[in-house]
Image 1 (cartoon, rainbow, N blue to C red):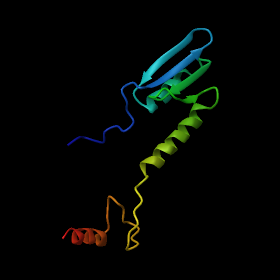
Image 2 (cartoon, one colour):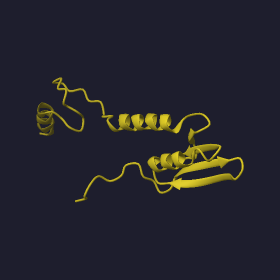
Image 3 (cartoon, rainbow, N blue to C red):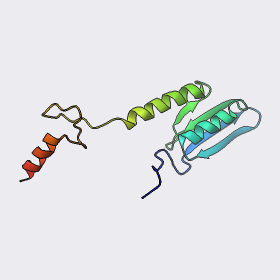
Image 4 (tube, one colour):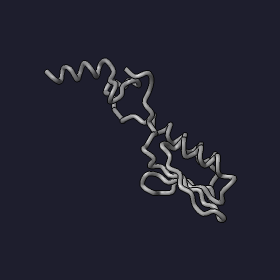
Length: 117
């Protein structure tokens, strides 16, 4: 048994932060998570012209030229939270509010067992 939950947003350096500076050029930082990428942007945003976060497919998901990192982080956290509470829709024939596809109410469990025999 593990001592806690495993990380859910970690990758193998596939999230890239690009720091663009007119004087020194572009520097790329590989990050293991969006939290790490956000920290890199926050630490460097005042020293560069533009900071960008690219996802593992190479799509730019944040650019400091168009938005503030704190605003983007807030929206990203809300979306992450929204996706984590999304559950599969299940229509309970007994109208039980606590009946879900992966956690059936007692009546639905009884029906499922009876259907097997």
